[in-house]
Length: 336
Image 1 (cartoon, rainbow, N blue to C red):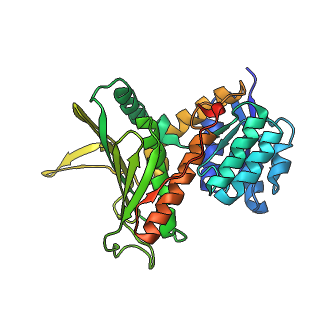
Image 2: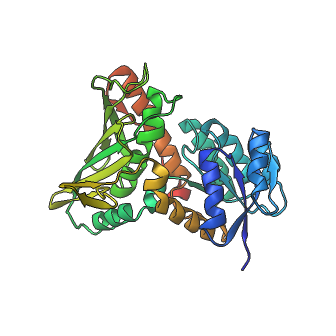
């Protein structure tokens, strides 16, 4: 069986994790080139791969012999240029979120795909590949709890990185709930409101954490998201759908349950790469299978654009203390 040759752009935490997955848990593919501005780090990563070339220039990595697809795990501001270059070479792309930091960049990506006449870009919203999220999607699509009225979401991290900002609470964290809500409900988000309690004492100075984000949808549902990135105890993602005829909750698993010395306690994941390990594997397997046929297997450039537009409205709502409408262009035929 032929192996899909992949260039991985970005060898930080996410890029290195993808390299590991491709080598150990995903069949039918191998990393043939890696790129990162940090020359020492990229050489170290490439040294652990059989025959992979190391580059500091993403374009050079995409032009390396054997490259048939591109996985982008570099910082968001570098995404647009890399995606557009990949599209010029007609290479399938899996891009970690965000597709681009702003809606305008995402529109330029969509325009490039429309000129090609086919979709080649997939965005790394991995929750769509999580088994629990997939079951909830099937339940909602089948009308199992009637017309959905609410999604109640929790998104908690033990601690935020030192570089995290209040805007990033929306653009880098809540954006996952934005995509999940759009996908689960089959509706666009039309407006965003953000409310802030007193910041936790565990938050770095200047970080408005936690926050409550309300999303209104085109179908009349309401989504509330508690985002709390310095909760202290671990990583927790839950979603409860409430419909006219019932409710369904996902993300409540405790892992191993221990009973000892008169106490009962469970385990809490400390990191998203643990909680969503299977989802990342499933996402990558499906993308590899689709990329080998020149196709997209999940959220596309329109989904990345919509998420960027909602993030922009959410940041405006948070900064101004107002309800902000989401502005979307008409959905192009290629993405319907």
